[in-house]
Length: 209
Image 1: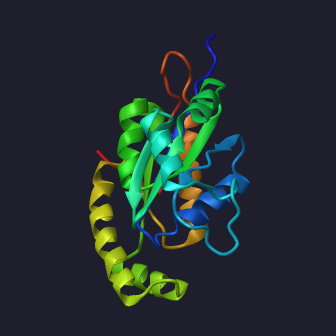
Image 2: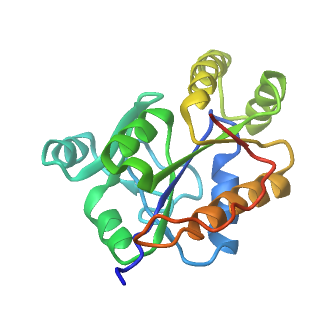
């Protein structure tokens, strides 16, 4: 029997939507879920270390990675560039391991084009725009102008949730993590290489038609 091929589980949400917290919890509590470390041109935030949260590179270094085809996807977000190194991820999938990606909607489109249905797209929705605004204010990292910019971008990104495979409302953290775990588990039930599925596991997360 052929080796099981891994899935890429893509988690997206608008800024303040909680994807970083959900992804961190999934990494700690879900077995055999590999981590992909993105590269970025943005300046490290307080407490971040190179090679842990991100690989921090210069704009020139990022441009070389992009120009030489070494990024699976890349996007410019809020003035900085972010990208996913291609070869480490492809090797991990070939080993039959699943990968969790925390990327925005631009990157999600590129991953879907590159990997087809081996990419499972999950969008974390805020309970409401009012709650999202409150979360951004509580971070105390945004100027008034930056807050308006992020909320405008959030509305555009939320509109893109319609073409994701799954949509999960991140109202209560534990429930959101449970919903995403159920999605991951359901896809892990697939039998390779025939593509036959076991009975799907129920989930409170919404799936697009």
